[in-house]
Amino acid sequence: MPDQLLFAIEVTINGLMAGVLYALVALGFVLIFKASGIFNYAQGVMALFAALTLVGIMEGQVPFAHLVNATFGTEIHGFGWQVPALLAIVLTIVVMVIFAWAVNWVVLRHLVGQPPIILFMATIGLAYFLEGLGDIMWGSGIRTLDIGLPQGINTYVDQVTFDAFGYGLFIDNLDITATIIAALLVAGLVAFSQYTKEGRALRAVADDHQAALSVGISLNFIWVLTWSIAGFVALVAGVMWGAKSGVQFSLSLIALKALPVLMLGGFTSIPGAIVGGLIIGVGEKLFEFWVGPLVGGATENWFAYVLALVFLVFRPQGLFGERIIERV
Image (cartoon, rainbow, N blue to C red; front, side):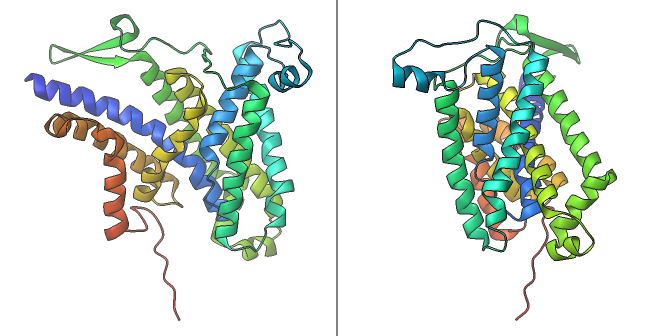
């Protein structure tokens, strides 16, 4: 097998794995947009906040210790114990559910019936608030996240070799683990949406708020449920990306990678988020492999956005999005 073809296969596999993680981030946007019509600008910051909370709990850190130390000149750092990863994850999920309830109680219920731009601006404010809250609660330093997933990157020891036609394909263990977890979560969300009572209620609310209210579906419950699920998705995304590159405030920028995925797949489609993520993941890796050397590299930084721009021109609703027809 020619080396170029072998490398292309390896790049494609890695692109598929990256695409699953992109789809995972995009799912948080899709879930909230379907249930409430809100484009949640804060989804990336939710992933950052969830990852910071998980690390803080695992390390036994005292919340707001940095604020207390700066205000009173004390030296509070931690409780002195380590919390097991599984228990820390459960406690972080509880925190994200409380966050979902607080968002609905403090923000959403006061904005019912407002134009979409008002709701969008509210999520921008929520993003900056949550980023600042994470800073004063857990600090702004770069944190290492280790919950037992394979760590090392780009070393032979931490890679799995597949024998394909007598050639070795090198794929990082962490990418494999992250892909399996993300794929299981995506499949679980699809099953939840299609086969559970709550999932059907969520789809009913997405189709028509007033009709859902008329049959006894509580919008408050659905919104809290949706933001809770989005918080859990943000936690998983934060853990996967945090394990790869460390938990730092640039982690919130993963939301920017989800935007082209949403434009390709459609803002209201869970399958669209999956397909869009895979297209972006494979497309940017192959484009960097074939075209990058011809233009000086770094094409992964802009390929997804150029592809999304093409879709906006020729198919603005995305591959699976609903075509909106307005009659006047």
